[in-house]
Length: 385
Image (tube, rainbow, N blue to C red; front, top):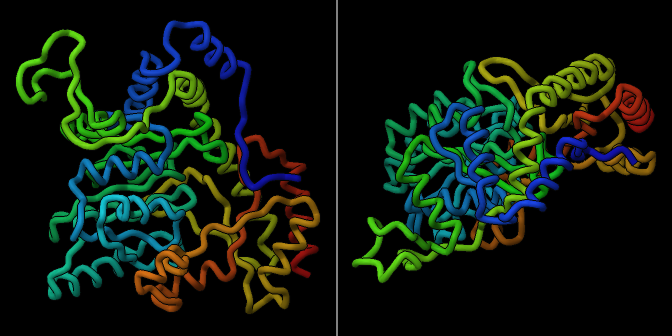
């Protein structure tokens, strides 16, 4: 089986992890800070806060932005559940903004229209979560301008996009947002096993997210209510969570970051080969370009119903039977039973639903060989015909 995504672990990664295993700290040690600093420096952000996974990063980011009951969080329907669930965790109400049919990202024009209507209705969002689907940045300049006009906070779900760029700056620089979140799950571009990082240029937000990832606890006397009893003393100043990442994971992440640019370049070469090899087939290949340089976490195609007599399901099943581990990203969040119980219905966000109905993610990972890619294309050609 050729999977749709997979990690690559080198001897350098193994050595880095072994060094931590032989050290004094397996968790809450210096490897975590080194990883945070290395990623923040790569992205041009002032602060990084590493946590157990990207869902935890989204959650503590929402809490740091003071999202709570009665507030609204808006995100894209074309995303994983966590982009919306993080708002639910805080007691907020959730809504969605339909996607651009070319980029599959939140449509900035649709966001502008929805904000205008929400302002008249008195229900503007407190937080908007644009999702950089498949590794390609949303139109962050337009979203950032809308944030200034309407007063909402911007939390970038950049889980797919580490190594990508927007207007010649790395995704994660937070030039147009308050916080940006990355995922380091094994199918992502680089991995820590499980792990996530929230980046920000706001020291107060970073400090609060650091507390929230560790039970809402502080040892900083300046943040305490009253004087500490002694050097052992700590206080819980608010309700937090145990969302810490280990030094073992952080060491793996730091080692993998050294190859990030190499991995993204390889993904671009693979995407260019896909573009050429699929040109005559009845599929729609993902658009790239403009202000965004995609990190290419995914390579999603659409089975073009106008040119293909086979359904997406038939193509998917045929590929799986041929040993090609394709997947589908994503089932629109608003169609999930949990969100339907909130009142959402099929047809609410038609462009996200139309994309989903035809989408198949082909294998895309840096270690994918040209021969394996040729095998994928051959199987796809047979599945389509």
